[in-house]
Image (cartoon, rainbow, N blue to C red; front, side, top):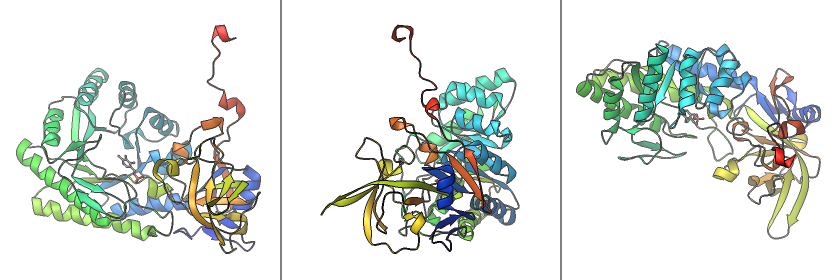
Length: 441
Ligand SMILES: *Cc1c(COP(=O)(O)O)cnc(C)c1O
């Protein structure tokens, strides 16, 4: 089905995840429901962590890129697995700290961190801040002077490698709101700029070449280019970087158009990267850097599924058949945003052969409210439970209350047990921040 051993079809012909029958989960918790398999999440965190341990003497850190799915439970699991986390907003930082996540293992990203977010990061002792603008360095330096602390920082660079799902290109100039280009001298200038800041401790560089990437060579190439740049600044500015953060982006299985990568396959990405970093250090005569990776999607994407109840079905002869579910773009906007593809099953009839191709539509007042197109299914009927696979990353974290629908709750499953990690919303939550000004009262 996908690459997880905990997702299977049980003797009743029902889809099962983490030892829990999804039809029973739907009955107990209602739908729509996000379901996360704890074992898968931990296995992924461990394989990255252990690969750095075994292949690179532990001289590195895995960060969970928490924008993929941010909630108290995820930070708690990452802390227990002894990995770090990256955050991109005050809200993610707040959640991590509330979960008791160690601040020194947090990296903060963002192309436009707000002054208040920087202040919050400094006040809470965030380990590393990844700089992405000149005046951000100014602001941070001032804040640190006031707080009487020296802050570890990285600079976000563009190594001139752009990766896409099945291809990558080398670019001389990068059109991106992120980072400083290594090819036009801006990354070097930013380095000199930051080195002059008395309260900033420049540790090295960060890059992130894209997402949903399967091509190992694109990470290897980016790492190689970043190392070339590190050798260049050592020569020209006398600065020896000791950290290289290569970002995230490892691809996952959504449909059979994507490769299925098991945990060893993900270890292989990291091994290739480590081999290149070692080779380049020797070749360039620079010290082996502390390496950081930031996988998000590959840790939590395939760990999650979404359960829905089938409602209205509209067959437009000669055109298409719409199967509407009780969720939609408010819990998964990825088709609307990127025409993403998904695999869908009828969880209560998971053994039945697929007899038709349908479009899974949501319940929002929006024709673009689609979850997936052309998915093979048995003939669906009202009341069936539909399961959309690989929804663990960038679904809940991108959800909204559009049309004043509820953002669905989430449960964590393990060994046949299921517990809420995100509670259901209520109508009261929907109007929680609404205010009637005096003259409307
Ligand atoms: C999004 C992002 C990641 C995680 O990417 P995945 O594709 O989810 O692994 C890591 N680092 C940065 C800077 C990002 O923006």
